[in-house]
Amino acid sequence: MYQKKRILLIVTGGIAAYKTPELVRRLRERSIDVQCILTKAASEFVTPLALSAVSSNPVYQDLFELDESSDMGHIQLSRNADLVVVAPATADIIAKAATGLANDLASTALLATDKPVMMSPAMNVRMWDHPATQNNLQTLKSRGVTMIGPEEGDMACGEHGMGRMVDPMDIVDAVTNFFDQDGPLTGKKALVTSGPTHEPIDPVRYIANRSSGKQGHAIAAELAKLGADVTLVSGPSQQPDPTSVKVIKIESARDMLAACENSLPCDIAVFAAAVADWRVDLEAEQKLKKDGTGQIPDLKLTENPDILATISQHPDKRPTLVIGFAAETEHVIEHAQAKRERKKCDWIIANDVSPATNTFGGDENTVHLIAKNQCEAWPKLTKSDVAKRLAHYIADQMKEEQA
Ligand code: CTP
Image (cartoon, rainbow, N blue to C red):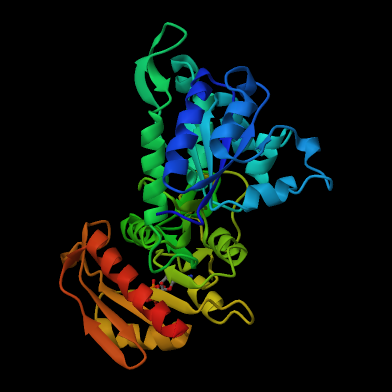
């Protein structure tokens, strides 16, 4: 079934650790290879011997036992797996992972891994509700960590509420769903920009636009569903972070460009953000004040870098497929075609954003896909259906590139 799939299971010190031999057994039944790391606190609830017996693998406990004399270094251990699962994940390991602490084998492996991470939190309800824990969870989710649970129920400490680890079978389901997600874009890296940018005038004012981020966020989500490893660089947006996507939040066009450049190399890049074309040349350090004379500030604007054009013409890290959007209010196709040539991208998605269409901020989009010798009109679709269709076109194109 899942032969050749490997999991690194990190067991941390919650009472739910006693359920992990059952979890390992169920994973092994599905032919998934499981390597375990056990923290010192977890070994109070489950023995290394029990986990070693059910996994048929050695159990790792100490950072310093993994040296040249052992057959596995901690970096190798953290990268050998296809997926890292932390179950139960205590408030402590969640905090360490969110802040990047690496003072034992479990936290070091989490910092060193380049593989997707799932966590199954388990803790007392007050610890779960604490703003510190909730902030740490947000941080981890924005980096693409998937949370499985917790659930509500009676706790070992006698309290009732959120914080109980989910049933081991729920973790098995999340793991097998993850492996089943191997899709046409598995192994491909994608970069997506989304939302507006905010260009500061002074510490309290900025220039912005009405972009909601709906289209860009939906594209990131759909590419991830097809198996791509997605980084979403988003300007200020109310949209929730898509699951299994690494989200980088920025404010200005210059920050967006820097975040995009740092995310290279990648295979696919989709520029859906409504980047502000201009910024104020000299941002005021203090709030601009009315001086009583009725004089109006003279804001001198300067042009922002063009992120799409920069990445499309990157000297050595140009993505294989670069896709831009063209927001137009008239001569939509002609303007979009010219924009594609000017910005040197492969495809451009032309959308009519004239006020009557309600595209900016709305839920629907009527677009044309424009490539070098091609212009395809798509019917009016919801933004999530535009994203779905585009993700499948991208997958087909990447297959052709590979053939
Ligand atoms: N874009 C970008 N960086 C900018 C401006 C635009 O990356 N500084 C990208 C957008 O994300 C989009 C494409 O370029 O994919 C076209 O954006 P659009 O606003 O339609 O075009 P502009 O270049 O701003 O041109 P104009 O406003 O003159 O139509």
